[in-house]
Image: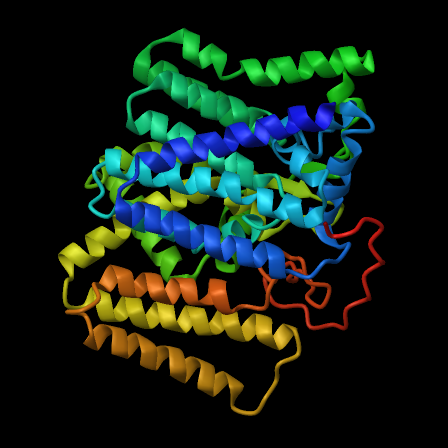
Length: 444
């Protein structure tokens, strides 16, 4: 009986994605169609292996029909479990395909927010979210950062449309999706009070988390259940020191999770928002700053081994909007210089990520690196020469999408047993991989 109820939550999310899509223009819908095709291919073609957090989350999702209290487990949290547990009852592949829905919500809400904020090419904001490596990877996986990002995109749309209750709805879902969610809720509620001077939506943003705690207290008969049932006890601590700001893991996460050209555009957009030319986007800076502080001062795992670039998926919509603003400014102020430089840098970044992952899976053919970099740089030059036929923004999009389509299936989703996570300094781990344990549940 519980599976149909859980499926109803996923269907509601699908209805939200379709409702948002109906408000999009043709170019923006094309981005959604591209995302759907690429993510579906990734979900279907990714290897099936019982490894990493995606598998652990999936196994917890399978526990929900047996024990509904699994919805409350502090490592998964209701914002993720309610959305994914229904499809997960039909197998791992079904759960992966179901993740496309929150990805589409995030993309559609981001593009609508971009239009409301006055960006000339709202579709570019969606493409610049999709192009973020870890966002794309989670769009075909079972991870908690993705529904958090979708909720943040909804909150951003509410802010852009002057709808405080929509902001509160997005914040409320964030509060029950990730352990750091309540911190984002508190910051967002303060922003609601500052802008609208209305305590009702600010208080409503806390309501889902309060209900989550209350249901857990009744289910476990323990008002301290979030502490006693927490899997993070003794594994998360605080580091103190100003040096943490300089050596923040946030910077490593940027290096690992974003195409290099996207980092430049995000930094430019953030500078424009901070200094005034893109003042309308300034509200995106606090969630980025909050995650920066968390990744700077929190110790995650006994030796920080749990830190991963995927945490930046949480703020992917904010990064995409800032990057879109940075791209528009670059093209407007440097119309001759910016396009070829951006295309060349995008081609170099695409070649770098392709080389990284194909080498990790064993491709070490003579001349492979030279052919890869030379071919993509030649493509960038050809796109620049054809600029009268293909606008620079579209050409940049082509170069950003190539890695998403051409990487080994499952590489960005961490589904491959032949690829280890990167080392703490962000470098690839080329040590031999221990064979994964055999799965106990079929792929579905």
